[in-house]
Image 1: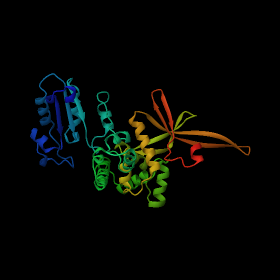
Image 2: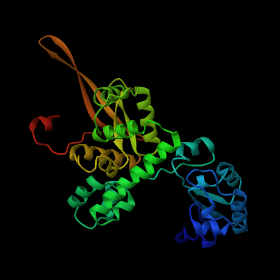
Image 3: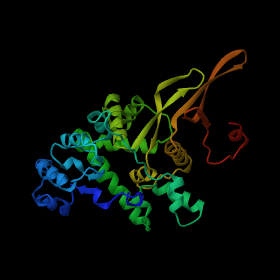
Image 4: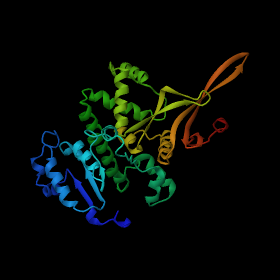
Length: 341
């Protein structure tokens, strides 16, 4: 912002989990029970501080982190929206404040900015080495920025496992008060093991019943997958019938927002380049702004005077405005059959 000519005095940063920031408003981090949420930060103290810092009519940029720790933060943010010279940027924990809550609470008065982990093209720009080595590392550790800056494999692995367990999964369990925590974690294992494969909740429920002797229902599984989506762990990608020009609800494919999270969930034991490359392509297309579907084409063939339907798959249909691309992912072309496909 300062490089664009914004006065530093018009950029206000405040982290609600920072002891030094809280002292500015007369709050003490030691007095706050931030984990349970029973004692939150006094909004009046915070508003008094903001008003004291915004004493002219020029534009102010207000950057707030962990806003869920502020009591009645929705009302505070709504009040900021009525200030013509306030431009407010907010981050918060998934357990209290999801992006869909922003859309619901501030409909028409705010924008959601979805910041993805680094895709491979971005990772490569910062990688000190050749493209092949970069690709090999990216397949294992993905593109979460903090992990990408680490040098040791052990540090990267511990960081990714810690993020998945202590941030993503913890937030989901707390937000939705989930009792079936073992089933939730088992489901994530199944999804991580089956990226780029067609699946559906009923099929997964059958797997739970036969292997885990669990009676978890397809509806609960579908709900849990929705929780993973809301927390930016993964995305469901639905099939589109190219000739019939319609969507097919299930089965669908699942891709992860970051490859490091897949491998961390599987303890880095199941590195499958073919499926991981498909996930990399999907994320790259989304990063470039494309709407992405899985394509399906019904082809009719005649065999011994019998009409046979064949269901063929196109890995991705990518749409952006009037542009449309059909993309097939292949890690290698090891045979004539694969080339023909």
